[in-house]
Length: 431
Image: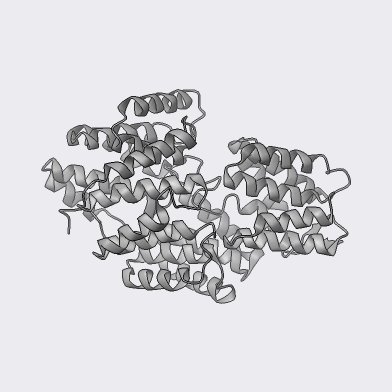
């Protein structure tokens, strides 16, 4: 029986199919283009290779093509006769994930990894800030992710993929030195690793290493393919570094040429999050609003994400709807979120609806109302989906509202409580 890169048996007799499967997984792990083509090659070499259909379903899901993902996972399910227990559990887990049964999938993931801890494709669904744990809506989600990876570390040793993710979780929990050791190891073993570059960018942000972050990303992006799945997101990181460093022209150039929805090649969810958060932060930093840009993003939201349901999408969609002054659409979205929350189908609970109302009040310059909306859910901000760098936008909005409301003691209190080491606040009027 052939095995994958982690020594797990795969039910195919075709070495070519196995090799294409391993290549496709690694391309997805590194956020390099070609993963889908590699998986198609694996299927062509062995049409009965169940795990190749599973991986294809996952790649389609990440691209936002849910109907195609369902077809692929159905094809995998039809091929489970005679495969190993590990592979059958692998297929069953992804069937739950593709079906949108997040809580059941998370429970199945834990059970699966207890027996097969080196199933990296399964672990990959929870190893990121936006994975199953990060989307769970739990206040302790970042600590929960780190605990999971800490427990699995002995099973992975010095594997470059795992250490890159472990480094990210450590950085998000304030453990910068061990995170630095792990990401340096990961990048040394595989420098062509988009997720590793992403982790290093986050570490530079969390450790306050602004010049290093800028120079690293400029150098690394120079050789990364434009159609790589992290090209626009890493450019967003670089734009934030530029904005903080006072190079506004370069920051906006990156937005205009790479991050904006009309040019962005990332999946739609990432495109929305990067574009909306940059434009909002641009204005918080004291730069003028660009109504045409906001209207373009508003149209993107209405086309790609017409209804509420994904908290990560929703809090970024709320930025676009508020900035485009579409109060009616924003109110409808808030009510949809609140209805889902009442039914227990919205993991972030009241946090995102409250923030949506806060963003609308902020745009109306009703800073007291914005403050009143954010403060009651501030202690639950970890329930938002996204990294610390991403959710800093909420803190910066609250700080700007305090400034505009003349509540300078609250400004000082919030700045003093900010996590140690992180790149400073990019808000006009705060130094």
